[in-house]
Length: 124
Image (cartoon, rainbow, N blue to C red):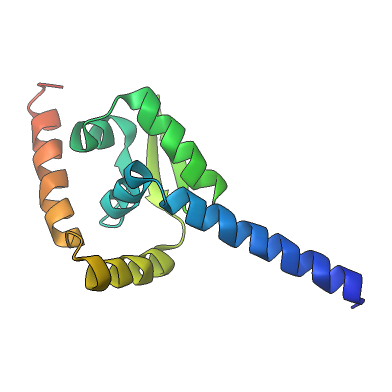
């Protein structure tokens, strides 16, 4: 491989890394990633848990998708999001938790189950 091709690949990888860290630098997007760590979720449930509007949540999910952190599947009219790189997210969350004392993902799972039970009861 020529030096210019190698440099081009290195630049692309560097740009991808910058996108990833920029995406995680926003507190709302970091909360979304922490929320999705315990499993896929549709926009309406995430909106309940995070206390933000569905359009705002969708905007943040788009940034996370562009950074290669999340993907989605369509279920009828619902968009259900999931982590594309869970092992990377697990490592990053572990570092943040050790360094800054972030809420462990198990608490997020309990909150997610509470949000799901509200939805099942038909109050949403």
